[in-house]
Image (tube, rainbow, N blue to C red):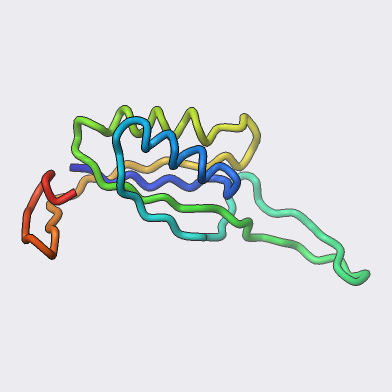
Length: 112
C-alpha cells in the first residue's frame, strides 16, 4: 500500500481529479498549501509599495492506493498536471503500513 502526495498548480486540480477518476481512483484528499522551490517567488506592487511574495499558492493532493495502482496514478497525475513551465509541482510516493476503515474496521487494501 502506498500514499501519493502531489503538489500541483491550483488551476490543474480538476484535471488531476478527472484523470484519477478515469483510472478508477475515487477517494482523495485536497489541501490548499503555500510553498516554493526553484520557482522561488515574485515581486508585486501594492499601493505603490513593492513587496516579495515568497510562498506561492499550490494544491496538495493525497491518495492512498494499493501497490498495483501506483504507476497508473503517477502517470495520470503527470499527464494532467504538467504545463511544461516552472512550478508544475512534485509527486512523492510513500509506503503505508496499514489502513483501517473506522466504520467497518476493515484493514489493508480493502479499507482504502
